[in-house]
Amino acid sequence: RSSTKEESKETISTEPEINREYILPIQPSVYNDGKLFPSYLLTQTGTLDTTVVGRKKMPDDPRVVDFNTPTLLCPTSVFRKGVSYVATSSSSCHSIAITSEGIPYGWGRNEAGQLGLGSENPAPCVFSPVKLDGGWGLNKIVSASTGKSHSVLVDETGAVYAAGMNKNGQCGVNSCTESCMSFRKCFIVGGGEDEGEKKSKKQKGEEESDAPKIVQVSCGENFSLLLDAQGYIYTAGSAEFGQLGNGSTGEHFITANKIAFEDSTKFVQRRLFVWRPYDQDKIERVSSADTEKPPLVDSYKIRIGSISCGKNHAMAVEAPFKKGSTGGAARVFSWGGGNYGTLGHKIQGDEYLPRLIESLQGPMFESNQPVSACAGSSCGIVLSERGHCFYWGRFRSAGEATMRPAVIEALANNGHEVKSLSAGAGMVMFGTANGNTISWGQGPHGELGYGKGGKKSSAKPQFLGGIDKCLTMQIACGYGHALMLIRDEDDEDKSASKDLPKVEKNDLQVYDAMMSGATTPGKSKKKKK
Image (cartoon, rainbow, N blue to C red; front, side, top):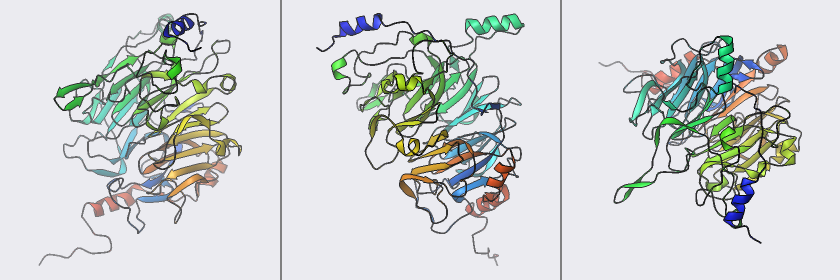
């Protein structure tokens, strides 16, 4: 017998209360392997020449800015003291690195001023990493993220700064100006310290604060997502696919034949989490955007520990909780654009509120808790505490979509314990505890890292060349490139990385000059008579 809406409501009202004591505060992005601001070596695959990505065919002749194998990026000329965190995304042709001293550097595409360098006529491509400056002054940067044409940084005080394209309000600066050419401070609505934290500060004689302390950020193509130290999320930017998670797109006509959406120009806290439509008979065919949505019984108590944005969707994993808490496995939520099964709900439909992915619940996940989220352009991956990866959606332009989470058997069946992962515009990459780095998908610019003469696409997982003995601590896949941070602590680490190719700032400046027309490769400039 099919359930009615009234029966579903009654079932929800009698659902046992979930009681969880979360492990707080949430750590910032620069926290890795039990350390704050660790020091790693930065390597890159793909191209630094963003003028060709998605626009032109790659040149046949090898260039100093094209990396078919993992290449150390400015290890002595810029990043002498190491890098703690790198940021790029499936929509991004630019990147940001945070050094072990908390200093941000940016490079890549800059047509909309997304690197925040302040020029009204920005260089379309910045080939070598340059230091970024803004209102944070001497404060350390603890998190960063990049969208298609904007960037967001978080400093150690929890303040947030953004630069770049802002047509949809994705910079969160309380306006829809065309672009922010320099980093501007963002507006955040709601949040602040909870009563427990205020009480603790009062006992220590510290000053209380009503402003949220942001610790992590993730950007989609035209929207941004923040996470504060108490596990609350905030969104700003485009509402077209429901990616703001506020329950609506705000679709309306501004002229007879032109539609607009109710975008958000400032970051607003979102605390409503739902599970599935009341209409149980249609659970396989409808999304919660199309019908009523019951909130989870503890919706306003839920704290988030990991966030990630794809092109037009977002994911969040519940914060870890202390032993003795009730309620089973940590919950995973997704919302926004749902093409190709991107949200993991077994349907192709948009979700306007963060919705529980029910396939990631049950006894199997109670003993192997989900710990972090990873969103690609049109896919999602969750990493469990035992190093297993569960995937859904479609990360390549060819092939069928996976409509519900499924373990990546090529990794699990071969005993790979995944420690780091990322999904880009058309590829995925994983780093394992055994020092293997694995990728597959589409990499027309060499981003798969298979080496000189290696394949530019692969339907099956393959090891990256030259980095097979290095421990990859973090991976960030972008559009036309991928970034990897490798450990450099002991003699074994140094031995594994000593033969990696490298490129320094001088090499890139010479190429930049050639691209600017100062010189022409292989030719000398003739003097005018």
